[in-house]
Amino acid sequence: MITFSCFLYRQQLSNTLFDVLLHCLPVHMRADVCRYRRWEDRQNCLFGRLLLRDLLCAEGYSPDSLERVHPDTGGKLVLDDAVDFNLSHSGNMVLAAITRYGRIGVDVELMADLHPEDIAVALRSDELERLQREGKEALYALWTRKESLVKARGQGLAIDVKDICLRNGNRATLRIDGVSETWYYQHVPLPAEYVSVLCTSQLLPEAVFLPAEDLIDRAIWYAGIDVTTLPFFV
Image: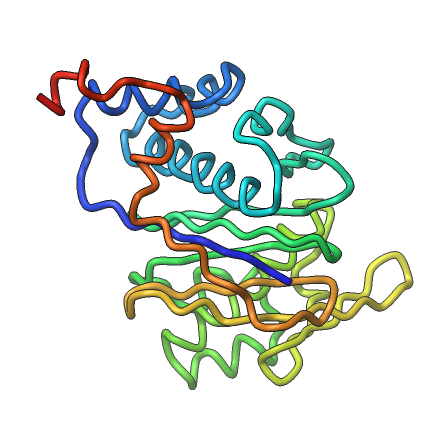
């Protein structure tokens, strides 16, 4: 089974609320958030880790499990061998997904002014020709599928995305080190301006959505903070 969650924010948090939510994270994750200069990037990083805690709790982990989450040698966040998870963000949308069955990668993209020529280095000639005919939606569908597979595998630039061959929209093959792998996709229903997909190493049932409307309230509750003492709740 796959469980996923997403959070769409509309504006910049107040400094006070941002600081409160920042302190809902372990110390090493606070540093991850604060290394970004743009407030949008800081909030994306912050909300992604709060979503991850909710998903881990849904899988039976304790709220303090984030203390043990760390990047592996490829930079992908990991906890233990029992679960795999991945985060993505674009625009004001943050997405997270988790599974106990194999590996998972996610990608979300805000559709903007992207053209096939902009990512030609990552496309085979047949893909480039097809995208020049089919338009923006096909371009983002292809790119999110390739990106999510790369993230699922967790090897970054070690994978040549031209070696990813999409099959019938819901699966792909990747030939690497002389071995052919099959990967599977699920569409993520998001607002029309976003395109997103889940990629897994196993064919799994339809993903389950975990609502996140009360993400901020839950984070504060997990941290044991008395909100009545905060000026923005008075």
